Image 1 (cartoon, helix red, strand yellow):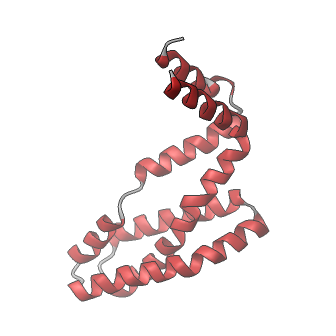
Image 2 (image 1 turned 135 degrees about the horizontal axis):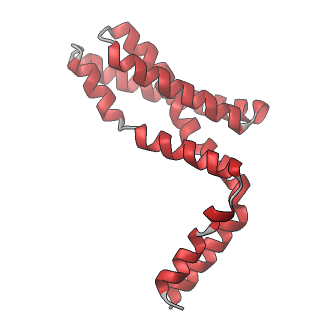
Amino acid sequence: MEKGNLLWSSLTYWKIATPEYKRIIGMILLFTLMNSSDMFLLLKARESGLSDVQTISLYIFYNLVYAISSYQMGILSDRIGKKKVFLIGLTCFIITYGGMAFNSRLEIFYLLFIFYGMLPPVRKESPKHGSAIYVKEWIWRLHWDFNRLLKV
């Protein structure tokens, strides 16, 4: 069997995947394509008139919110489910990026970075757990096929 065919056969899961799996992957793909680096948000804040010190303090504030909210989002995920927490993350994403487009005030930047600080814990974990529910056997198949491909 050729190497390309072995890898391609692992990707054919999409044809037999459930609609719910396809919907989750579609949301993750859209979210990933629209997401940008933290640096772009900080550059937007700087461009809006914040000083270097204010911009750096905004980044420190973001990391503080991120650290505090990570544990809380995990607890919330256990209580209400990963899917709802992922939707909360998408809402935080929309609020942050929408607000960034029209803001130039320091106070509003801090408010937006509260929402943005809650986003990474959700963004990094919920989609992985949610999609893993639907593709557990596909992941194992891809893993073993990839290992076989490396041995050829």
